[in-house]
Amino acid sequence: MSQTAIFWPMIALTFLIYCVYAVLMLRRRQAVLSGQASARDFKVPLKEPEASVATVRNLINLYELPMLFYVVCLALYAVNGATLVAVIIAWCFVAMRVAHTCVHITSNRLRLRQPIFVLGFILNGALWVMLALHLAVPPVV
Picture: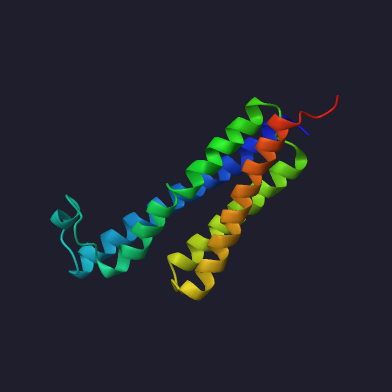
């Protein structure tokens, strides 16, 4: 397996962020068209229409924990530690972010969202442990 395989989950997560931006634009546009908000409300969005508030919060979430994901993926690549296991864990993390986003911007049921987030948090942590182990105990060639 090529070390560059670690970039595909990163690309997929970036695509998810673009999708959430598209959903946010559509929901804000709908809020303006329905009269729930005016375009001026988004100049300094201190009050977000109910139709888009969960989407905004999800977008913020996609710039928190996932930033650690990007860093660890780049670090694994840089130290030649992007193993098949690391790539599988990275894809699982992305799957958890997709699932978290789907719940967050639809039903927003915390009972579903929280365990998905926790699993993604653990997966991200596993990548950091893999990086630390790779640095501490380099693989035998």
